[in-house]
Length: 148
Image (cartoon, rainbow, N blue to C red; front, side, top):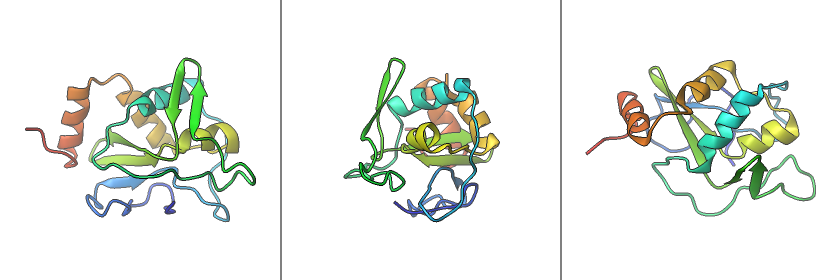
């Protein structure tokens, strides 16, 4: 997986570099923020990761490079949710920008004490109950997708 420091432009997708802000693109050997997160945020994050909207389809699975022997899970279970991790990305609209995080972020938070930036956490909480139409409108407002 590519590495981007939190809150820096995410150039991974080759498009929208001026609007995409990286969160959770972690690799061993690079420091990252550790700490607690509220369960309300984590629950909202997992809910959004159930069926994330993505402008691109990725092939394959990215292992967790922090898990020394197992390469981490490919499925993540939390309460009544099961999500695929390591194969999707989450786009979270915010005012004038869109956060993008690999789905592995749920595992990083749960197993490796990762604490995403508070701005990202707030954007997830604001976006968690959006309908698909509301979500796509916010993405369009940020210049990410076109509604037809």
